[in-house]
Image 1 (cartoon, rainbow, N blue to C red):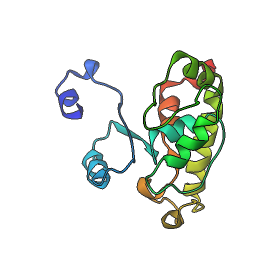
Image 2: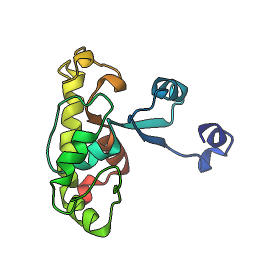
Image 3: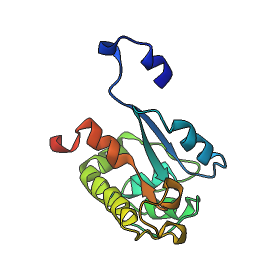
Image 4: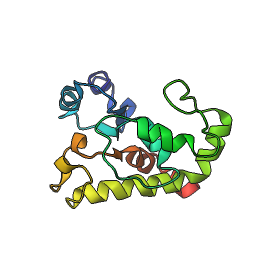
Length: 158
C-alpha cells in the first residue's frame, strides 16, 4: 500500500498508513516488523500477546508477561460484564460488548500508554524488556492501539 501511495499525486497520498496486528504465536513477526521499517508513512500498532489484551485494558492495567499466549487474558476478560464465554471460540465484539467497551476507551488508552512509558524507562515487566527503548516483541504485555487513537484524534470527543 505504501508503494502504491508513493505513485499517487501528492494531494491524493495518505498522511499515514497503519499496520494493526498482534503477537499471538506468529513465528515470523520479526520479519514483518523489519519489512515495515523504512516506510516513513507506516505506523505500527502491535498488541502483545493478542488484540484481546487491548480489550482487557478497558477494564484494568495488567503487566504480567504472557510470552505470546492469551489464555490468561481470555480468562480475565471473560470475568467482565458482557464478556462471559469470551475466548478462542467466541471473540466477537457484539453490540452489547461494544457498549461495555466504549465508555472505557480512555481507561484502555491510559493503561496502554502507561505500559509503553514503563518500557521507555526500562521498567518493562518482561525480563527481556528491561532496557530503555526495548523492541516491540520485548514489550510483553503491551498494546500500541493508543497511538492509533492519538493519530485519529478520538479522545477529545469522548
